[in-house]
Image 1 (tube, rainbow, N blue to C red):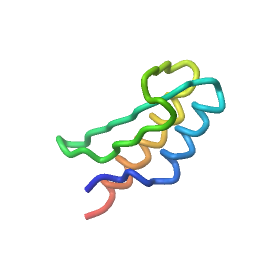
Image 2 (spheres, rainbow, N blue to C red):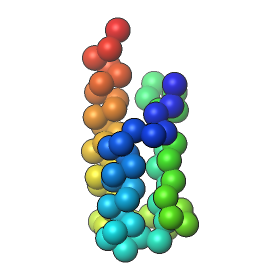
Image 3 (cartoon, rainbow, N blue to C red):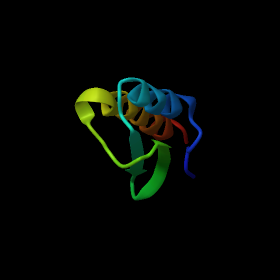
Length: 70
């Protein structure tokens, strides 16, 4: 089940745009299952130093939650 509208991912993508990204796309898989598929802005330019780290943090939280659930 994907989590495209998780508020943590949306907040991270919005922050990337605030920091100057013109677009960002994030996809994450956990054990072969797509769990995050989100885009913001023009989604053509990624730079970890300016915006991807919050998205990675949010994705890690989602993965940890999924591992904790039965």
